[in-house]
Each structure stands twice: as C-alpha cells, then as structure tokens.
Length: 117
Image (cartoon, rainbow, N blue to C red; front, side, top):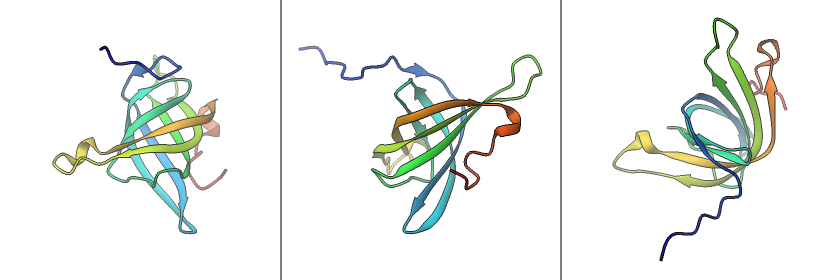
C-alpha cells in the first residue's frame, strides 16, 4: 500500500541560513541552523541547538542576495511540532515548525531573532 501524504501544503527543498529564538525556562535561547525544506505552513531546520517540542519559536530565514541586492529575509513565528535527534550523525539533528505567521522583511527591518517579538 502506498504511503499517504498528510501535508496540506507543497514543500520546497531548499537550503537557507536560519536564526532561531525562543523562551525556555524563563530564559531567552538562540541558535542557528539551515533549512531542509519549507512550505507556506512550516519548515524543517537542521540545527545543533534544538528547542523543546511545543515551544513557540521565532525564526528569520536569510536567503542570499539577488543580483547584488540586500539578502532576502523571511520572519516566521510558529511552534515546534517535532524534534529529531540523530545520535550517530549530529549534523542531521533538526526540528519541524508549524508556521503561525510569515512575513517578508526589508533589510532595515531584520533582527527578528534579536530578542524582540
């Protein structure tokens, strides 16, 4: 029997740098990662720093500049829905985020993961 795809949005395999920010035990936590894939509903991020499941998270996805312009930055607010740990290959550790809001940032308005909400 073929596997059934449960996702409601098309995922795009792409690699872009990500800045991460969340609150854990009353403290502000940060990290960096790289996207594995994205959709309008969420994304998967490879990261050595893993947030806990179900925590609200802020991400800033940074795409390289197009033709000498400033980098393209997308701000995502969401919730961590799954954490994957690969004990034999830590570079494949990562987590899935369900997106609650997504917005395109101008270069001047970047810094979404610098502690602001």
